[in-house]
Image 1 (cartoon, rainbow, N blue to C red):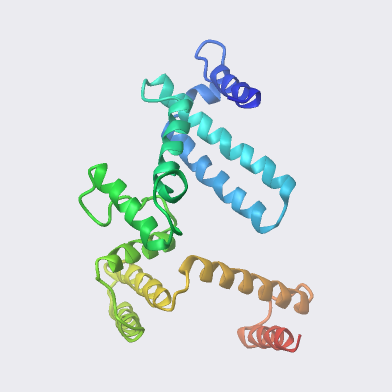
Image 2: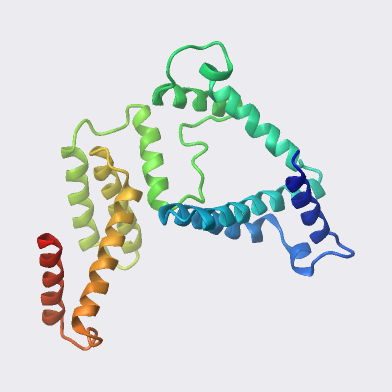
Length: 252
């Protein structure tokens, strides 16, 4: 183990010491730390998207701290330690790459990868195709993963027409829903939209992320054109600015 990793583990042990540690760190649990772990993972992704290597170094450290924090709490409870975490992922990576660490030959393709993961789930006691899709994933991404799992069992539309018709059906059901059912119908509509996007081989999370960025860019451009009084304009005037921004993007 490297000197710096040993140092980090020692720092966490000191922070968690019930007699001389930090009161905040000692008070934390898996549940209270989990949101920070998710946040740090997003901050890593953000640094990568901005191509900021200096920031990425720091964010990876923050994410590593989360792993060390969880492992320390687990060790205190007698479940496992950081070394067990490292051993488990090393074992998993070797098992998932039999063409590198085993006797298999050839290139690892997507189907072989999924077959290996399915075998792992079965070995761990999995009884359903849906097992192992993390509940904490962003809802859009989780919807896509659930649909892909179902598709591997053959439960999928053969073309774009099926999910397109289902999306139209869900739109109508949302229009007709009463107050008690509206949220459920809205969820069904979003789930159907993910299915249609997936049928075109497009990742829904990536597509919506790009749409968010485009909307934000155009909105900021409208605000700039309005010179500080965008919100005071009526909808027709705001729409005119929107069209101006779109036209400027097309032209260049």
